[in-house]
Picture (cartoon, rainbow, N blue to C red):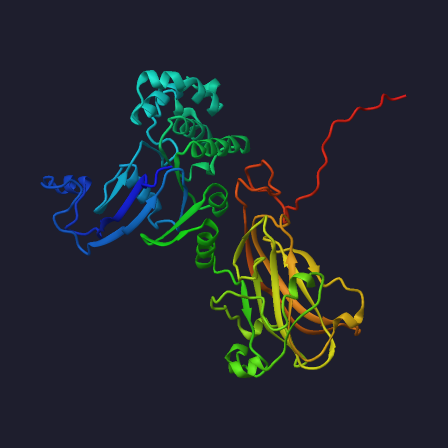
Length: 483
């Protein structure tokens, strides 16, 4: 692999001019209606436009992409993702800056781009491939493989205006994937097609990148980016807002766009934020880990909090705290990863923790619990520590932390919510010290396609609230003949 980037982008910007239609604006229809002549100068530009303003679809983009990389580009609609791909594909030209491309580029920007609706599928293969620089002889050598991959051999001599969108997508991807490009650019092309064909596309994409070719993949699906890409770029309002590891960038993007609350910091009964206390006062209070079913993972130290991220917490209004007694009060709760770092999203093949930090005012029985709610809003389970002796939950006054660990390959893809509480089950009825319904949110995303997970070989999302990885035993067996 060469150390020189296959794509070097420096100061790349693209400007469009927006203008409100008015008396001075023109169109072919309006000019003919007024009996006027078409203006001279650049086509499409009015002599004067009222309220004209510039829109920078891209502004000062700087990016290096190396051979063999699989780059995912994410962002909201209108952020500039497709504009960037169109510039790199030489469909449009930048207003400022430059992009140096080393190698042959094949792009699939829209399903059916470069197709003639009146031509047959076979004719469009020759047309589309020739537009990418292949000779007739080169296309002859590959056309059987392209047709076989597309799985529409029966209709290959039918005009594509009679094709469904899925058939067009099959043909378009089949052509693009068999041109042997140095750089393959895809813009939301895997959103159509059935499960089996998507699996073939994924396998083909792996083959392309394994051969040292570069993939640039634009998608709104964070799961697809997580599965296929090894680097991610987030474009926001025409600028690069983040670039780096897929998990880091997608988490920032999800946090900013979905407004998930993965942190809860409560106020005390006097309305004073706990973290506003002087450090000396907090330091003088004992900080103890709470024993539960995962205490071997929790009890890493008696004086250090599990949460290591320095990101600002999200405060919820006091009204969300349905119960809060003076005997024990909630201080904070967080979603954390196995390294005890605050997170907003996680891959489904990673362990994830719910950390609850609370203060006990007097000696008594205290049992923490969590409830997990599915992306559909239904209650999946309640969980409490598994120790059986009552004395295991008898605690002295002080600060405590309890962590419940949700195992890997257990969740499905989607947004989950977590309720938290602290109770004394020795009393009848239970005494509840605090309870916050759906206090935390977590986005579970697909794991990488190269990593083992409960998805197996299936390319599409699974239905259901959970996707547990069960132990399967598949082996041949000789059946006894019936008597």
